[in-house]
Length: 590
Image 1 (tube, rainbow, N blue to C red):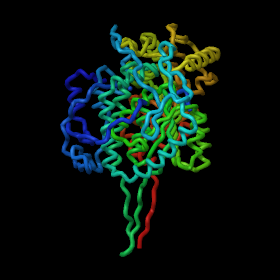
Image 2: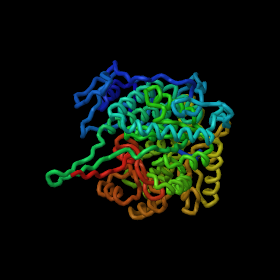
Image 3: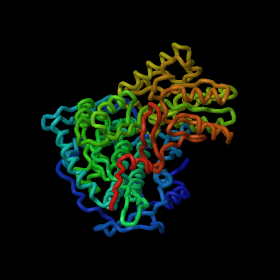
Image 4: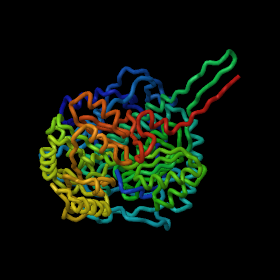
């Protein structure tokens, strides 16, 4: 766990390797705003910030950005952003290494006073903010109260046609833009995110529900992603193949083309950045459709890109009726890649649309995270870690631990300890600093969780904690623990995507692996054991794109994030995130 106020932690933060060295005098030109402001994909999805203090540049090889003498960028082939520790050290809250509040932290009574939803919603097309003009609208609600906060304009067919025309223009120009210039804009965007972090995090809490500590963590992670992709975009290397004298064979990596990206509502800041940053770094243009339920966060992130100097034709943001928007964008021959974060059923439907033009796809879909807890684990530490991780963002996380399979020898103690810690959590408005879990993001989610809980108890599961609505208005549901949940219960087979933990027993290592791999999902898995041989076995045997052993940390800017089986294909983050936006070309010269 890191505390922003600890001098040692802040020192570590300042000493962290920064691939992109930006002196105080740096600038990116042409950051003026143009006039104006700013498929619900599914019921889904990971959040922090204070002003960043100047960091002394480290002695890595760098190259100047043409035309921007104040910016230098690392091009070292073996240097990567290693972790988010610097981001964690810059927060104003005490947050653990997976950006969640400690469940047993002493609650405060302070309430964050500024609660205005002060953003102007709009569509961002061809460098202009559009609203009104007879467009249909929908309300953006506050999950803590259920009240409307603002009207969001929805794109019509003409808007989408204009966006497609612009993204084609943007791609032609952007693919020819020097990588150093692309990187400089991404770095400046990261700076603006950090500078505006408190405001953006407040908007996220007001429209998505998560507590402020998590929202600020999301800002910090998004900024770290921008820094990483800016640097990684400078390392898109091809190769020269050996040939007889007078001939040459080249292997080139080039941007795939305009991207259509669809985001979920659970991490409205990070999801937008996770789509745009690698596309822009690779030389692609992009049209992004964030969730209409969390539009304000996306609008504020787009303002950061705009004010950092990203051309308006390169990244555009639209909202609308999900089915209409997806069909329109994916039917166009202009679109060459689909990137989607959301549920398995919607992902499959979009892949069918994408197949008509054989476009590239990256699919980050649902999960049903198994947790294997063996009797040789550090039980108290494991409980503290898992309760915090389970209920972050009210359990609305694709990689959330969900099925807790616990070895017989410690099952009863684990169940009692998990339930006790869960009952101690304070639930409330995410703007209240005392809250440790906020409401769910929309009215659909509490009803869905109540239905799953009722089905599980009807099949014989024991209710150890929670199990009901929060009783305080808004979209609340109590953090819930169910023990001895049979495989026949729906929750053991469908992604709950909410604050419910499902406990069951196992006897042997083979039983644990069999149960972990039973479902068609393969996104994330967690294991807790001190046995080194078993750790290696589990890393090999479990069918998941990401596995955490004796911890819950899965997201790093330099590490691929994605699943296998029906949880999707392709990776976001890491070098793989940019590679997903590149095509390979062989050129043979004689």
